[in-house]
Image 1: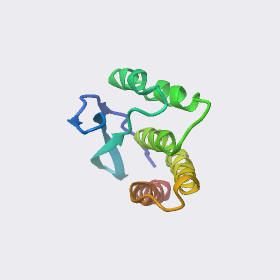
Image 2: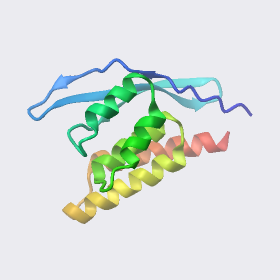
Image 3: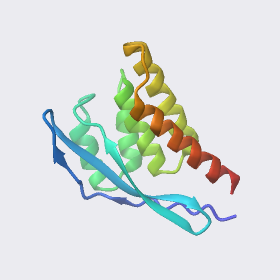
Image 4: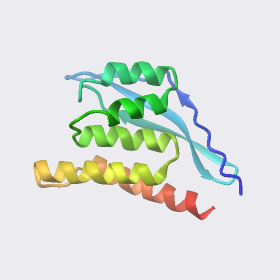
Length: 137
C-alpha cells in the first residue's frame, strides 16, 4: 500500500489583521485516501512563546521539522504551543503525534479555564478522523 505523503506547504501567508496581531495560516495538502488529496488551511497561533517570528521564517523555507524542534524545545508550553505542534504534525501526516499534542492542548486549556475550547475539540475530531482513515489504508 502506498502511503505517499505530500509534505507541501504553500508558504505564502494568508494574513488578516486582528486587534492583537496578524494571524497567519499554513496551507498544505492532506491525504484523504488512495489517490485523494485535499487542501487544508490551519491557523498558526502567533504571539505565544516568543518563537513565532523564527518559526514562521522556518516555515517560509518549508522547514517543518526545524519548526517542530524550535517549538518542542520551549521549556514551558501552553495550549497554543501544543496546538501549533499538532498542526505541524498534521502537515507531516503524523496523526499519532498530532493527536498526542492536541490532547495536551485540551488538557492544558481545561486546567487553566475549567472549560473546553471548541477550536481544540474540532481539531481533535479532525485529527482522529484523518488518523482512522490513514491507518486503515
